[in-house]
Length: 113
Image (cartoon, rainbow, N blue to C red; front, side):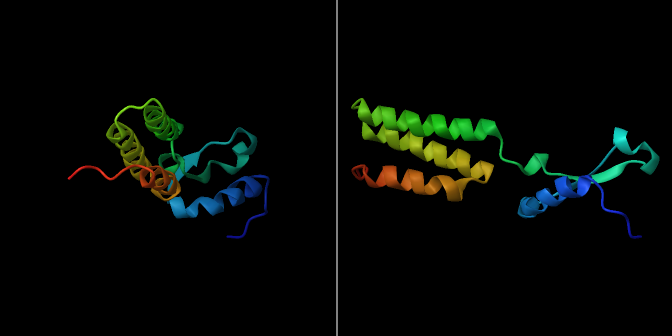
């Protein structure tokens, strides 16, 4: 059934670029369109990277940087950076974070053994 374009098309159309994240159908009511019944919108909430993961990654990267600057054992810095990479992997951000971690690790002496 063909329908007339409405003001939701722009909003929903902008979400099309997020398809690679996956989608979950969700039915919601819309106060402006009571006569048309509920609308089906795509909900990307479960697939969007949380700000908590980004903040945790940032904190771990900075912790490693600070440890190195303060003369702490370089292995402690390595641990922080590898933890940041693990958090990034879990959040689906590994491709973005790996280059940052790789640069830091490349500047460290190789671990003993």
